[in-house]
Image (spheres, rainbow, N blue to C red):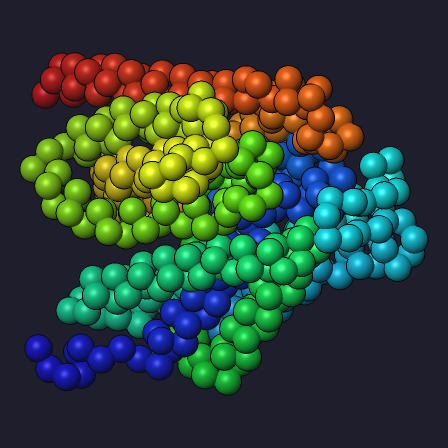
Length: 458
């Protein structure tokens, strides 16, 4: 292979650098988004879950439509718009509580004190600020992957996407890692300042795109909104795909608890010294180290077979997360860690392992269900399961946290009454374990029925 074929363009490296910064910004905020909404803006568990779930769901649903618009106006202009919106949005997350405090509507200190917000509608002003992040993020998801595709050749595309995938994981890891030092140094006020870190990351990406991003293609013909909508209707009319999406939604409902339930659960049950943002990093670490090996081991097996193995791992994950509260005690002597924190890490590791069996093969199976020539459009809606699971999973999390693991502030602190209210906090994971098990059994039935249908057609 010639040197020219192996080299990547400056636009490729600029796009990946911008992706690294964007992922660090996003995950730094998203891992604590429900904590921010509850501890800073005084939303209760259910309200915070509804807002965060809608935020996540739209980030999965809108990129296909944003990508169509990006094709029309060009990738550079799209990235400039995206990072401008993201910078304003993240800066707004930090500035908004400060403005409320300046107006005398709220007070924050290093502990968990906030006043004046519980009954104030001013806190809903955060929604249009989060909308800026949704719009910006929708462009990023479509444009960066499109750039990697356009700026590579048939000879180096696999390597290009491998670099991109690595960059995504490094960014996600970095964003989550920064949260712990901020919380240790500043308490809950650190939940505000993480937004300034994210704004700084996206501003740096904006500058990089402005000066260094020179794509090979200024704009593309792309698909019209009408064509994309038609494809979406086709996907909804494909019974086999919709049933599979509903089944896989069960898996992702449990997976999303990494952000919906885990941070609040760990801090409430294991104490404020726990590090949920660091525990969450176990997931991408496991995926990164095992997905290649597992995909290779499963290459002679069908996509449904590999996905089924992953689905049956998920109930094990949920049981491990529940087990921490049943062990009891403040520390596990052999590792000097709270049992809830330790078993949470074990459960998250199993989640990552399950994802390695499921995610790559789901996309493969999904693509084979598309009409020939429409694979790209269909794959644009391959994340419908994450749209559904974000809404359902976060809402369910809010209800279960309120029922089994309520905020200590509702009881005036960690009182005996609060301890009684949280004595069955691990029941939360039984619910999600049941969803995972039902989904796994459903996938087995789905595979059997599909095989029978295909045999009859043959």
